[in-house]
Length: 200
Image (tube, rainbow, N blue to C red):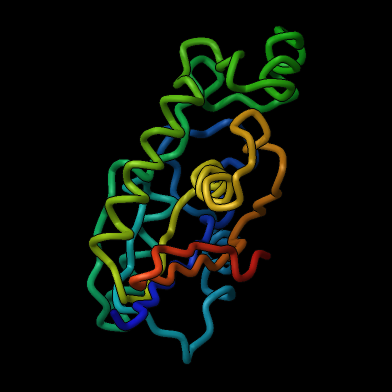
């Protein structure tokens, strides 16, 4: 069997309107700065076979623009949404620390055990991302894909590929706005090899 190489370029959305906050499901669009960050992160000569995106505006609007400009098929994948932060949605870390500091400290210490109040359990989030990732590895085999998504999603994918424990997945690797990572999957009769090529 000839080796088939699949490339996934991951890019986190740029700065959303409203600035830094817990905004898992809060559907804010990109700010002007966010649009500049995203457009600046993609070179004119780059091309992909497929653009894949989270359904949230801060990802989807840029993905649609890029796919339309370059004539690339676009797929919206619901499972690549960000972690839902429950009662913390739309609040800053400073606001949470002012009212319930211990809850936030526990989340950062071990998010597997201490989910945000009313939020999505990290284990459930991990399963959702892993299932979508496995599905798209099959569907996009042999292609080059740009995935426009979120910091938490990228953290889960890198943790999966690099065998990072789930409780460290939110803190082990920093993913700033418009940060790019590349994953390469080589499939042959010897098996499947998946690795991180670049980050940041």
